[in-house]
Length: 206
Image (cartoon, rainbow, N blue to C red; front, side, top):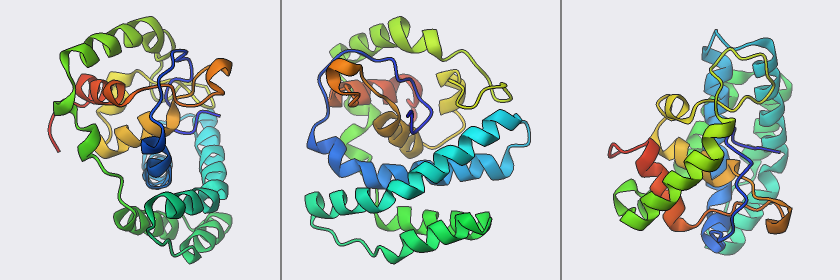
């Protein structure tokens, strides 16, 4: 499953290791908040796009408890898990405003650290590598625009990145990219790759 709506086709290896493990829970909160914003405000979405967003939100909510426990173990920061059952109840009852507010508040508590991934930290070598990855892999998939009759369309990254904060784009880079069977579908990007993609698509400071 492509959790965050980015390209699953990357087949190289490297990996983010425990940096990614520590980031998954806060990243997922940001992604759910972004998906809810799109579902609630973007009128041009097709029926299939809405169906895909709903499925992705449902899947993300069902996995939050496991991710919260991973986050607790690795960071030693306690998570008040009561908000997760509340979130599932709001979703089941169709209370999207309540759900969005709850997820947004939780994302402000369990914060995704942008600093280590900041675009300004990308090296010349990082930029060369991600430019090659982008040309060879990403641009081949990411050709669609909002309103596409597809459940999980691969949007043009330049356009998609411009609709969100740097933190949300980072969250989608971390959780939305999958490798090949050789990498057991794990995100194969390195820390330098993430910084490079942030600079390529979200160059402005935040």
